[in-house]
Amino acid sequence: MLSSFKIYIYTPSKPFSFSSPTESLFFTSLQASPFVTQNPEEAHLFFVPFASNLSTRSIARFIRDLRMEFPYWNRTLGADHFYVSCAGLGYESDRNLVELKKNSVQISCFPVPDGKFVPHKDITLPPLARITRASHAPGNRTVRYLVRHNGAKDSKLANELRNDSDGIRTVQ
Image (cartoon, rainbow, N blue to C red; front, side, top):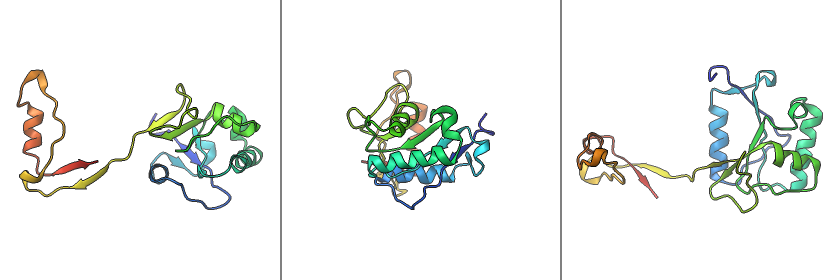
């Protein structure tokens, strides 16, 4: 399944930038993934890119244009589409926004704004953590959390982490 799974990314009519680092990282990662296709006929899912700070009227126009230009939205009323929005979309009266909110999967940032997340279909991205390279000297490495296997103080995992020369730590 993974070898044939494809995502088509719609091209917005005007260039834009995402309003949060999480949205930008998600979009950049998606564009670089092996799942992206340039042929919408091959796609299983469709990504709808828009800046979350756009007005609801502009987003509704973008969806309207998609439905007029491409047949893919109309096949499922957007059920095979997804978008990323840290601000989230509310329930608006415009038909295009209602279908986007009701049928498409919203990928939100953590924490999700109240009332802008549908638990049975939407997805939340975890918060971004900065990862830095620590010095290779064992005294400077930080191990934040060790799992104790069967109650043993010195598990195999703990010993491997102590002897690890990579020295990666998470900074909050």
